[in-house]
Image (cartoon, rainbow over all chains, first blue to last red; front, side):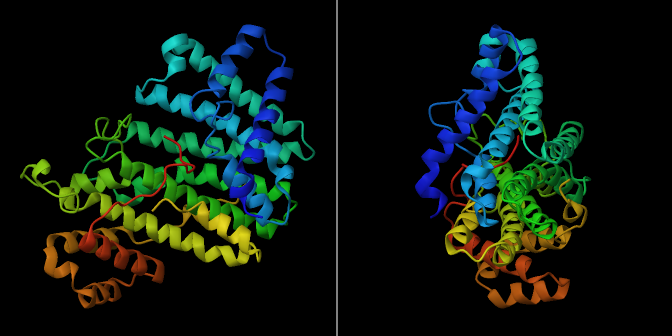
Length: 300
Length: 78
C-alpha cells in the first residue's frame, strides 16, 4: 500500500504525537499556547491541513526499509517540530513576516523556536535508542544552520564559486532530508549499510528540493521570496550574476534571461534527481515503496 | 550519526555544466535543435550519465518551453 492512500491517517497520527508531547511538556500554559500557535501556522503539523513535508520522507523511508508507518510516527513528529522552529528562524533571518511574528513579535517568536527545538529533542530522547536518534537530528540541525550561515554571510556575485553555492544548498536542505530518511529507516530497524543508503538518498532529494525552491525564488513575481533582493548565494543567482547582459531582462524570455539561470539550476537538480532515482532499487524491492520514494523527487 | 560523506564529495562538475548551458542558451534555436552538438560537448568535458541526461532534458526544455517545476510539497528549508 502506497503512502498516498494513507496520508490522512499518517498526518493525524503525527499530529496526535506532537499534541501529546506539547501537552505533557513542563512549560507554562501561555508558553504552551505560543508553541501550539507556531505548530498550527499554515501547513504546519498542527494546522487544519498540514503539508507533511518532513513526515513524508520519514514515513516513506521507514516503510521502504521494511517497517510499518506507525513505527516512524514518533520520529516524524520530532522532525516536524524541529522544522517549524527552523522555518520560523528562516523568516526572521530573511526579514519575512508570518502571522506569529505579526501577533507575538520578534522576541516571543524567537523564544518559541528555542522551545520547539528542545521539544523535538525531548521527543526523540524519550524513545528507545533515543540518544542516537537525537544525535542524528542534532547533527542535521548543525549542518543546516552552518549552511544557513553561509547563506546569510555570502552574496551572489560573479566571483563566487558554483561549488560554494552548492555546498550551501547541500548544508541547508540536503542534511535535513538526509536525517529525515535516516530516522525513518532507523525506526524500521535498518542496518548500518542501509541507513547510509537512505541518508544518501535523502541528501540528494534534499538538494533537489532546495534547488527547486531556489528556482521558484528567481521568478519576477515570486511571493515571499527574498533571495534576489538579498543577493543570497543560491546556485541560480550565482550563475545569473556571471551572465547578466546590459539589455533589459524584462524583454528577454525565461530561457535567455541571465544566461538561462533557471535552466542551469534545473539541470543540476535533474542530475541530482537521477542520482537519487538510481539508488532506489538498492533501497527496496517493494513496487509501492519504490513509487513513493520516486514521488519524493517529483518536483521537476 | 548520519553518514554525510556524500556531502563532502562534489557530485557534478558544475563549471562544465554551467558552460554548456550558457552555450546552449547563447546558441539560440539552431543549437537547441542540435542533439549531436550537445552529445559532443558532454563527451569533451567528460560528464557522467546523470549529468548528460539532465543536460539533454535542459535542451528539450529550452526547445519546447513549458513549466520547469512540479508541486511545491517537498522538503526544503529557507
